[in-house]
Image (cartoon, rainbow, N blue to C red; front, side):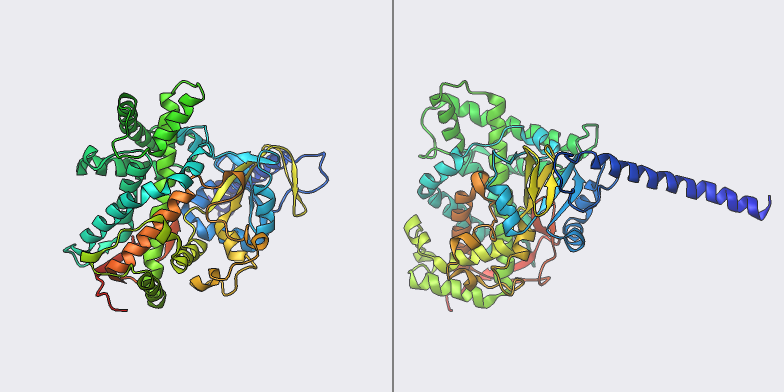
Length: 481
């Protein structure tokens, strides 16, 4: 066989598939562009649509923050892509996000990716929960304080050279969410049963954002199997609530309130809808708070001066005392801890647990000189919006004092959105605020700690977490500032 024949054969073997692949990508891009609304004179945003059918889902799942930062540098504050089986426009910046969040029910509506709707359920939680949280916070405080104090004692008594903070915090937040939101009592779950539930929940969360393909061993398939384990346990709890008129914990949990609200409206209790609502409550009530609490430990471990300022505030309020004189917390004293609240805000600014929110365009809308066609998904970015906000100076610096001086409400409203915004802000934000403040108080007055690997590398999957699980050595706080 001659040299020219070998070259031709090699070209045919490698070049032809490459050309076919490039042609397929180009045709896919053209096909996606046909979704443009011809009645609107504005162009589609810049961006790429990735591979046929898969879009850019795989790149985002594998690279996450790196992928999103690359897109922002290349295309700016608004760009098109194709994620989770749908053409999508990603939006960031206070003004752009303001338009999206204030356009709820008029321009856009909440719509999670198909995999999320399949696993969690197609319905959205009503605003009942957030409104009820505001009035029930005082009932949460002793339960949260009890769980956090017991957990910190276990950490201080740990025998190993270090503790992996992130998995420990996830277990703590799961126990709190099960008690506060679903009414589970400590005696209802054995350590093995609790561990099985936590593992099932983690498996479900890992596969929440996946391609909508339900075949054996796919992400969606694994997520659904894990969800079924959770649903079975929740159904046991719901049936127990139906049989018992008086709540065992002395207060009504969020699930009990939802059941009563449904019955008060003359509606039948639908078991599947209740299980879906309970699962979504757990997702919003423990994964995000675990992420935020882990970030709090990291930032306070890296900035001892900030930790000392928290302790000084506690000392002024008579809260910095020895374990034998530990003061019970209540809502009145928690609301007086302004600097501690600023520490939590700064943590959520630099490391928001949820990177963004999902919407769908109800009609073709114009944004920043581009069109977003009707039916396209819209993702508003929380982390990017915080990164580019003009409101903040020295944005990479951990400086809680920036929140001590209130900014004009209008300018800060959409520059700082850790819980989203508009009509559909996070239903559990009141619960999260109370929980994180109690956690910070108990941590600061009980422990000193050292991050063994230094500043952590954070990853999103889909909640922000430290890649190394934050190995940390805890010792008891001496009480001296």
